[in-house]
Image: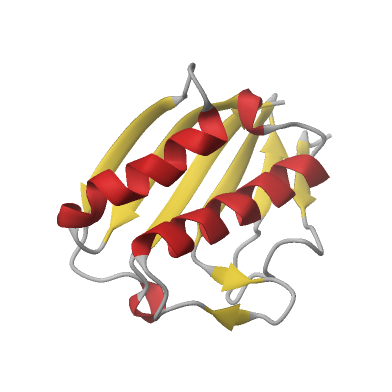
Length: 128
């Protein structure tokens, strides 16, 4: 018997490839990298600034976690991928509003390019 459940939410974008938006397994929820796609329109926000993109990404993550029955407080690890590390401070200002005074462990890396040329992608691991 498998302890694996795929998580979807109408308040988060659909997967655009052969992956699940989130998976619950072995007491954790693994949320795939989220990019700034508005789930209502399925439109990308490529022209938005890093703050708006980060907020949209974290709202998408929040929706998937809610569908799994947990909150952002359950997040234990995040990985933030930035197209430009000079935007770290602006991204961080938005990021901290979602996690408060006891944020999860985090890695932040600059990458050469992100899907559809967005500025930020974030994935998370949460305790279930």
